[in-house]
Structures are given as C-alpha cells and as structure tokens.
Length: 542
Ligand code: F6P
Image (cartoon, rainbow, N blue to C red; front, side, top):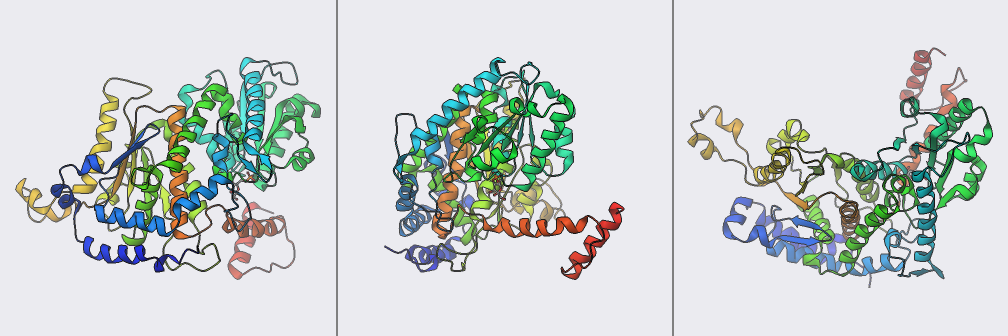
C-alpha cells in the first residue's frame, strides 16, 4: 500500500487541528489535571527509564501520533529494515546495523548469505587481535609490545570509536594509551603522536570506503612518522591494521589484508560503532565487555522490534520529536548527559541524527513541504547550565531537551552525585513549570525587575535515567537514538541512510587543492572564492 504524502495522512491533519486547541495549554495545567501524569507518561526498556511527561502532549496527542505512525507504516518499515530489505533507496542498499549485534545463534539471510555468521566471524578475529594486543603478545617491528593505539578515521569511523572510548573509559585497560586522529589539520596528528614511542604504537586506519581524503592523508603521515622513527618500511606490517569494506584499496595503501577487519555496505558509517570500526573500543575494553555493549544494542533492538508503540521508547522519542518539530516549531534539540564520561555523546549524536535526517526530499524525490531533521547539539550537565541554559529558559525559541542521568556515579565522591542529579530534575522542572510574575512579586521583587525574572516554562524535555553507565547501557542508549532517528525518518518519508549532501564540498575542495599551491593561471570560481584563494596564497607567502 503506498503511503500518502505526510500532509495528506489523516492523522497529520488531525494533529494540526489538535495543535490549535492545545497550543494555549500549559504543562502546569496538564500536571494539575492529572496527578498520575509523571508516572503514566513513562516507559522502560533495556535498563533505560524514559519520563516523557514534560512534553506538551495529552493522551489525545499521543493517540494521534500513534495513528500517524500507523498511517506512515512505521511497523512495516521497521520490519523491512530488520529483514534486510533495501530501504536505503538512493544507494540501493540494505540497512542492517541491527545484524551487527545479533547473537551468535541467530541467523539472517540476505541475498543468500547468513550475515550473522559473517558478523561473528569478524568479531572472533577482532577478539583474537584485541587479546594479542592486550596481553602484549602482538609485538612491534623491534620486538616490543604495543602500548599505544591510534585510531585514524573521520565521521562514523572516528566519532563512534572516540565516543565509546570516552564513555567507557572506566572499563578500559589503563596501561594502554588511546588516541583518535580525524581532522586533516596536521595539528590533530602531531599532537596525538608527539609523546608516543613508535616502537610501541599501532595505527588502526578506519575507513569504510578507504577513499576518504582526510583519513588517507593522516594515514600517509602516520606511515611516514613510523618509518622515520623505525628506519624500515617493513615496520608497517606490525604497526598498521585496517578496518574497511574495501580490501583492494587497503592493499594499495600497503596494509596486508591479513591485518584487515571487514564490514559490509549495509553498515552506514554513522551506524558502525558496533562493527569492526569498534576495533579500538574492543582493544580498550576487551572482547567480553565489547560483547556487553553489543548485548545492550540488541536488547534495545528487540524492544523496538516487538514493543507496542505506547511502550516503545525509540518510537515514543521519535514521534515526540516529530511533534516538537513539525507542530511546535522546534528547530533544534539539546541532549545533555549528566555524566562526564558521555562528553562526546552529543557530538556522536550530531552525525547520527543530522546526517541521517538532514534531507529535503522524500524517497521518491519530491521536495518536502514540512520540516525534517532538527539540529542536535549538547554539552554535559552541569556545564551547560552556566552557559547556554539561559536561552533555553528565557529565550524566544522553543528548544526541547533530553536530560540523561544515572543512579550511581562510577566515581563516587562525597555528595557530588546527588548534587549533579538534583540538577537533572531541577532543570526539567524549571523548563516545564517556570515561574510566574505573581510568584515573583509575592517574593517581594520590585515590579520593574519582575518581568526580567519571569520564566514562562512550558518547555518540553525528556528525562532518561539508568542505574549506572555500563557497556550494556551505552549500547542500549545508542540504539535508542538510532531507532528514534529511524522513526522520525519514516514519518517524514525520507531516506535516513544516504548522505549525498556531503559530496559537493568534497569535489569542490579537490578542485581547489592544486590552486592553493602557487600562481597557477586563471581562477574560474565566483569572485568571492577567487579573492579568498588569492588572499590565502598571499598569507601563506607563496
Ligand atoms: O563524508 C561523510 C562520510 O561519508 C560519513 O558518512 C562517514 O562516516 C565518513 O564520511 C567517513 O567515511 P569512511 O569511513 O568511508 O572514511
């Protein structure tokens, strides 16, 4: 059954009508009318508790959002993804990151191949390699064990590994040093390697395509760095491994494909942290804890696949995002982890959400007449509170936030954790309920100053709570956002799995590179670009 355009689905029109009635209702009233709201509007799965009661929704809103999901064939779309159908239409690919975390005894046949068996074959090779590094059995060119691991990659080949390493640092082998090089700015490579002993350093070159300019440039500099220090090109064999889908290019670069860990075109870069791209994570954590991470992903996958919509965390979060974006007009969403180890989580989510849903046409190429993916951004709490939360509370924009908290700190110290967590609850409260002029005047504030202190409230938030940050919880958390993104993309009818928008800039940069070198004759760009190139040449003194 074809799905009608979004605005022609009956539930969309009903939501628009419903919004006109609801827009003047305040969260204060919604809570006052229903003493159970805070308990009722919550859901729990895979160790994560979601309180979504501080969204501007009623039971009727939720019913209409579930209708919209049905009319958008969310469940069918989800089943197609899990079955390996080619739902990435513009690239004609399956989207099977869920297969990366299926247990060993599962099977999923796509084009005649059991992809789960393939996944576990690579996981076993990764585990063997990770153990050799961790135990010191893998020796460098001069016979010394590897102690430093440098992941070179960009986008999904960097953000996943660095986010997971930082998030799970508590569980890592502290005798090993991990660095992550992504930016083609040489400073990134130079600072990451300046104190490393080449004899004990291993480079993991991570690139799905093995054709990404930034990564190949950094990998080439890494090879030069190593050979300059060890004095022998043969050293590359023991100090470089690759993670890629492209064996030919890996071999061309000079890495033995016996030291390559593969994955498949059905794993998108931003969905690859749990593939071989997670090799550095597995070395840091050990295979067992990496298995826990995968188990957390899988638990959330199973929840998403089987739970009814009204208890389905990713579906609820995705539908609430559609509500906030398309009906309440939110343009961005803040994600604030109250957990220092999750400091790179917002950056990771930016690629996951914005590369996925930053799209302007539907699957059949029609330009959308509604808003799609919002801007995601964030910082660990409580730092953000002393910087940009002012705008969240009193600015003129509506910015829904996800606040992520934990029951226990991995580093308990005096009363830090209670102070930290009190802020999760206090911020959600302040955003929702604010403070009225009446309340402010009643405190004795002068009428001149009172308007400056008014907090309108009625600002939506989700609170996510878990017991403590473990590999399993991290897996569930990432899968939660992955499937929320899927839910949003399905409602919007867009391809959440391509990223053509990043290509033009790459092509233009390649054309400009040779022009920056010297006094090459005519520049044929627009007048701004020509002037900037000439100014750059002058600045660099060429
Ligand atoms: O340019 C965007 C992108 O293609 C991302 O989608 C991807 O994660 C990143 O570049 C890196 O690509 P690769 O792993 O092929 O080097």
